[in-house]
Amino acid sequence: MHDASYLLQVIVILMAAVVGVLVSLRLGFGSVLGYLIAGAVIGPTGLGLIRDLEATRALAEFGVVFLLFAIGLELPLERIKVMSATVFGLGAAQVLVTAAAIAGVAYAFGLAPAPAAVIGGGLALSSTAITLQLLSERGEITSRFGRAAFAVLLVQDLAVAPFLVVVVALGGGGEVVPAALWLAGLKMVVAAIALLGIGRIVLRHVFWPVAEMRNPEIFAALTILVVLGTGWATQLAGMSMAFGAFLAGMMLAETTYRHQVGAVIQPFRGLLLGLFFVTVGMSIDFALTRQHAWMVAAILVALLLGKAGLLSILSLIFGLTRAQALRLGLTLAQGGEFAFVLLGAAMAGGVVAPVVGQVLLVVVGFSLIATPFMTQLGAALARRMEESEAAEAGEAAIGTESRSGHVVIAGFGRVGGAVAARLQAAGIPFVAVDLNPHRIAEARASGHPVYYGDISRPEILAALNVETARSLVLTVDNPATTAQLVAMVSYIFPDLKVYARARDDTHANELRKMGAHIVIPELVETGFALAGTLIDAMGETIPEVGSSEVQANTPRKKSGRGGSQ
View 1 (cartoon, rainbow, N blue to C red):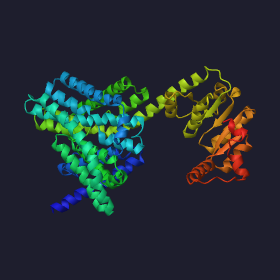
View 2: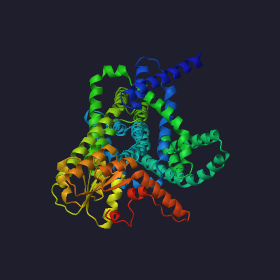
View 3: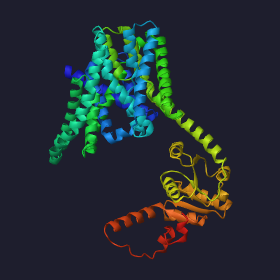
């Protein structure tokens, strides 16, 4: 009967998760919010379908472990080195400043120094699991913003061990806090050096015979063993299992097995992480929320706005743009899953009163539910700020210079950037316009004269001094838009040489009829370049091809027309 009851609980959790995620995805809010709301609905203070949280919580914590392992797989040491000390400094500053500010507020409202310090440390942390899941769904983990967010979260995870040491020490009287902190820091450094130094060498030899067997079950078992074994080792050393799993991922990221390992853990990570989010949702106490509704609401708003404001200010100090700073602040404004661990330990040790701790846990739970909305708001506001700044700076700067004999590039993506690099190497002046603020920001940071502007607008053409330009290069990745631009420019400036990128031969012929001087079909050009490289590598010579179509599509060095590029 007990087994049947447990099975029924599993069925209820899975059913709620499926329905919640489907509804959330249909509304455009992502899977995380669906898991959280599903847990809140079926939890003890919701419909009461699930009442025993401890049975699922221990298993759900493994979701965070596997998530950190997967992130470690994507961050070998070479990529970690790209993250500047400035970014890691931002993470450390965020933890210290936010913890101090929250502790100060708690102390001002009458709490003793010890519980105020614990609350400050617990609420200073953000949710690694939810934030990284949202960034992963958006494909932004490896972007500049994603790297900054991950660095801050990584520093927060490293801070969990010292915070736990403080909580335990305060529960025992607090006399040995400094010594315990030094010991925790020393353990972290030793563990990281030992695992990354020795583990990378050992794992290659461990995985090699298993990979030779070509048995997917044994390979999966070895992968799980490495994840859990490393997490267990770091937990014995006084650190979190998640930190050990992250180090294990970094070790395997240096091997040739990283892609297969990632594929193996994907089902475990997704299922367990979803279970973790459901468990967090179930832990929200609606009875306590109704009893202290105004207090919960006030603390929640103060937490979200306060953390967002502090992190945004610190991000500006550490060199991020205004848009990036605002977005980072809103994305990491929530409380974190480790707050449940820290506050739970503090309540068990008598450091934080149960009522205060429970109210704060409810606040953290609601902040996690608010995270997808805060993330979307941050992305929208950042996009609007970037577009506004790029438009103001771009159009104003375009009109302040007088140019002649230059090349105008419309579109500064992959192809436009390559054209600009060749022109710069040849000493030919150019100016470019694009409608993507991220590209513009990156290009201007590299010193390129790229501005925000729509090349189809006559005032933008005039501001770019197209009438005195040597040529116009259209690299827009849209056949219909390119055709319209060629027709318009050829009509307004009949003497201007127009070089255009075409999708294929049919599109190329259409552009020539509309007035383009030189047209490069990207598929044909790529095919000839690949074939030429292959033939050269084989030591063969390329025979003369008497194809008028090839000669018309591809300018040669012997042709005077090609030399003007």
